[in-house]
Image (cartoon, rainbow, N blue to C red; front, top):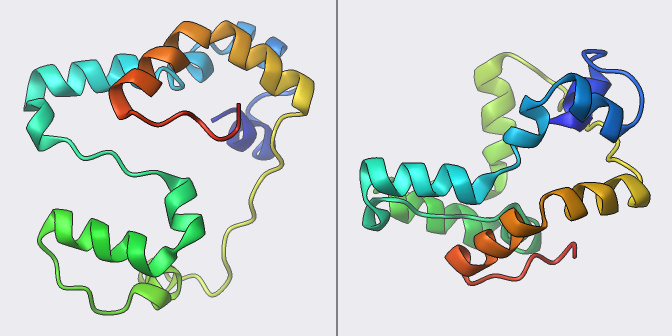
Length: 130
């Protein structure tokens, strides 16, 4: 969220400053807390967790898996980006904002360490960016 807010000028300055001024930046990163709420509301058996890193490794396999979860036909997994852009009426992909620096990420990881540990327990996946 911080990267997008910074990219679009909603926040200025370093990550720590932006989090102090806009607390929901950190709150949006509390995936374990949000998953707990969704599990309580919808039942853990009805929630599927997918990872962007898996999509980056093998987009076709990732899209096939998501289609399977949703009960949708697997029609054009390699062209999904083009399909989304066409549906939105855009010819060019949105620019990706730059990510926080290594030091900023380390500070964020320190602030969210308990949250990260809980998320790793829930998903059974150790976060690759650690």
